[in-house]
Image 1 (tube, rainbow, N blue to C red):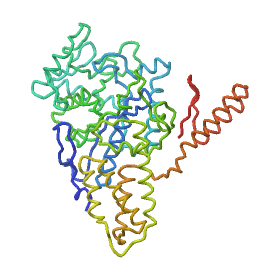
Image 2: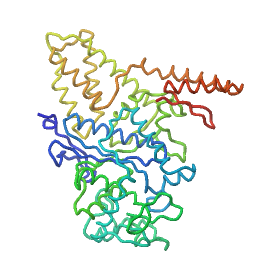
Image 3: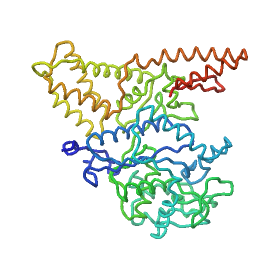
Image 4: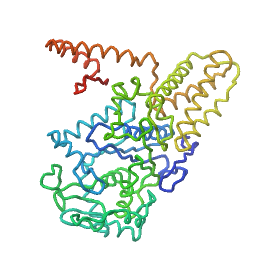
Amino acid sequence: MHLYEEQKIQIYNTLSGKKEVFKPIQDGYVGMYVCGPTVYSNVHLGNVRTFMSFDMVFRYLKHLGYKVRYVRNITDAGHLENDADVGEDKITKKARLEQIEPMEVVQRYTVDFHNILKTLNFLPPSIEPTATGHIIEQIELIKMIIDNGFAYEVNGSVYFDVHKFNENHDYGILSKRNLEDLIHNTRALDGQSDKKNPQDFALWKRAEPQHIMRWPSPWSDGFPGWHLECTAMSTKYLGDNFDIHGGGMDLKFPHHECEIAQSEAAKKQAPVNYWMHANMLHLNGQRMSKSTGNVVNPNELLSGENTFFSKAFAPSVIRFFNAQSSYRSVLDLTDDGLLASEKGFFRLMDAINVLDELKAGDSSTFNVSEWRQKCYDAMNDDFNSPILIAYLFEAAKQINQIKDGNASLVSKDLDLLKKTMNDFTFDVLGLVNVSKADTGTDKLAGAVELLIELRQQARANKDFALSDKIRDDLAAKGIQLNDGKDGTTFTTN
């Protein structure tokens, strides 16, 4: 008997606005799609929070015995600077500013994305498709939408007719927005747009002569709209109707709303049964923003090379910090919060490390089976990781009492406690068992800073051979020096 037959999950479905019992379309199998990054810059820490939340969901579903096909895409074309279908493609703009090929931009930041997720102990998705690898599928999808009467072509561009769709469907069903209100709050077209209405969105955009990324289509040489790629890729790999679609709260409108409209217009059915949205990550009580400087990237947090935090933090401490808050809650990243999480994380690891030393007793003073079910109940309640962690600490207290001779467990219960602690701590939460001494972040930072200072002195003395040797030897040890206008920082691989 599989665990999923014993444990019934409830998922908060954004579509209905309430928790619902999870019933997969096919018994024992789960199809899950999560919107991935647009690879035009280093991955944002807020995005990492979203991906980390769904990594935990993926892990728990697998733990229960489901066969999960987890699809997370890479957006490598078509994402314009403005949701109103105006502005420059983000990747093309980056390529133009740096005078490199767009696919060089894509490669650089895709590698960065993968490195960060590997460092943070993410499981890879089952499939990681790219937008540019599915142009044919997107063109075919547009043809279907046009044939069904929900799109129109103007001057080589194709737009989705939101007003036409809304006559017999509900545009706004996910975000709970009313089309009339959207019309009222939208500025009138300036006469230069090809759209019939401001609410319409692009399925295909004709490329201007200077636009580098372009593909042939029945309508023009151009590129697909941003919303279209996820519909094409999710339905290709998961079917026209699948179980779970996840993403950040910021994608609910218009991106996910447009996905629903596209699928219903083309396939004549709702694409997703359970919509899940992870909430925002704030920094010191305020929204992260590059324009205000209130932002820190994952490498800066891991290395300690930033002005917001007192030290570097181990990857598992960051995961633990994230799990101490519900994925649906706003999470405020602060130095005090991370320091507290670090203490809690090492306290939990210390207890787990004691487990192997414990000897079975003649009786059990702790009901392990009942506690184990409470752990499942927490995760079954919309993946409530904060409650799960509270139960893990309850067990840690019992472990320390057994160690001190104030409690005991018979052999069977001790084995069950060990297995359950390992299952939830490492398999489900994705933590890695390290001690405080193993991380050595403070000592490492001090040693590397000393070498950076020696390297700067060598460069000042024009001893470039020594300067290069320090850099190359550190790189060989997995420590990368980064020279910038504000000095030299380092990151670890």
